[in-house]
Length: 449
Ligand SMILES: Nc1nc2c(ncn2[C@@H]2O[C@H](COP(=O)(O)OP(=O)(O)OP(=O)(O)O)[C@@H](O)[C@H]2O)c(=O)[nH]1
Ligand SMILES: Nc1nc2c(ncn2[C@@H]2O[C@H](COP(=O)(O)OP(=O)(O)OP(=O)(O)O)[C@@H](O)[C@H]2O)c(=O)[nH]1
Image 1 (tube, rainbow, N blue to C red):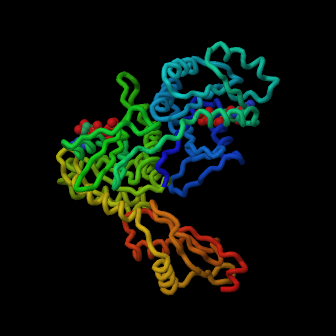
Image 2: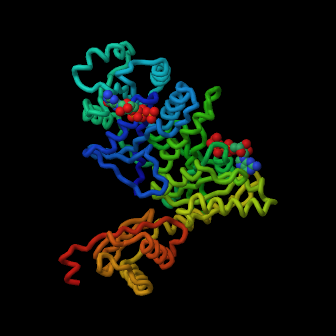
Image 3: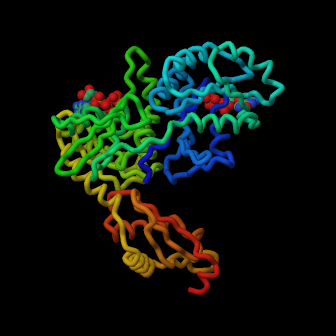
C-alpha cells in the first residue's frame, strides 16, 4: 500500500473561469493516467492523476461548494484558505477573456502572503495571437510566472502540466514509525467530536510526533502506545481561523479528509448520535472506500441519546440506509464527553487491522472458490456457463483477490456479491472491505483446460 501520500493539488478560482474545464482536461488527457478507484459515492470533484510518473490528487474546489446564495468573494476566499491549509500546490485560475475582478485581487493578496506553491494560471487564452492583448492587465499583478492556457483548446496545456509536476513536493522518506503501528485517521463533520475523542484516547500518554512530511502544516499526528501496540492518531479537526467565516471553511474539510486518507490504514469516521447521519457524512464514508481504507464508525455523543431507545433504533436504520455499502464496518457507540465505550476502539482497531493485512495461501483460496461455485452454479452468459478456474491473492489493505474465468464480463453484480460474501465468510474477513477482480483466462489456455 502507498505509505507515501500523493500530493494534493487544488484548483481554485472564481465561478466560470474554467475550473471544471481544466479539471477535465487534466484528468481526461491521454497522457495522464487517471486511476478510477472503485467507489460508491463518486463525485467528480477529485481524481487521482499520474503525470510523467508523478502521482497527485487533483481537487476542483469549485464543485465542492456550490451554494448559489453565497457571495462570490466569500466562496472563493473559503476555497483559498482551505487550499492554503491543505493542498501542496494551488492552481489559481483567472479568466483571460473577462479580465481581473475584485475577487481575484483579494485572493492574490492572500496567496502572496503564504509560502505555498502557487501557479497563477490565466485561462481562455485560446491562441498565441490573443496573448498580447489579453494579458496586459495581468502583468500588472506582479506575480510571476504567469501560466497561460486554454483549458478548452489545449493551448499551453503541456507546459502547464510540466510546471505543475515540477512544483510537486519532493518525495520524502515516510515517517519512521515503530513497527506494529496502526495508523488511524479521525474524520467527520466539524464539531462531531474528533479532537475530544483524540484527547480522550491520549489521556496522559500524549506524545507528539512531528508533522508528517509535506502533508499539512497545522495538523500534528500523535503516537500512542497501548498494550504493546502503537497507534498513530491523525487528527483532521477543523480549520480554525478566528474572525473568518468558519462555516464556509468547513465545507472544504474534504481536502483535509483526502490528505489524511492518503496516509492511514483505518479511517475512523465519527457521527453525531443526536443529529444522525447526514449527506456530508455519507460522502466522507464514500471517500474512505474510494481510497480502499478500512473503516470504523463511531457514533459519538451517545450520552445525548442514551435514554432514548427509539431514537437509537431509528438512527441505526438510517445509517444502514444511507451507507449500505459499508455494512462490514464496526459501529461503536461512544461518548467523548463521558468516556463511555471509547476503550473498545483499541481492540476493534486491532482486529480490523489484522483482517485488513491478512494473507491467505492460494490452495485454500482455490478450495474456497471451488466450494462456492459448486454450491451455487454461476449463470449462463452468451449461451455458455461461466467458469472460474482459479484465484489468488494479489494484495492486502484491502485484501484483494484475482479470479480467473472464461468471461469476466459475464460476472453479474449478483454473482459477484455472492462470491464476495463467500470469500468474506470463508476467510473470516467480516470487518473490512475486500476486492475481487475478475480476469479472463486467454482463449487458448481456457480451451485446453
Ligand atoms: N474560450 C474559452 N472558454 C473557456 C475555456 N475554458 C473554459 N471556458 C468556458 O468557460 C465557461 C465556464 O467554464 P467552467 O469550466 O464551467 O468554469 P468553472 O470555473 O468550473 O465554473 P464554476 O463551476 O461555476 O466554478 C464554460 O462555458 C467554458 O466553455 C477556454 O480555455 N477558452
Ligand atoms: N454531549 C457531548 N458532547 C460532546 C461529545 N464529544 C464532543 N462533544 C462536544 O462537541 C463539541 C465539538 O467537539 P470537538 O472535539 O471540538 O469537535 P471536532 O470534531 O474536533 O470539531 P472541529 O475542530 O470543528 O472539526 C465540543 O463542545 C465538545 O465538548 C460527546 O460525546 N457528548
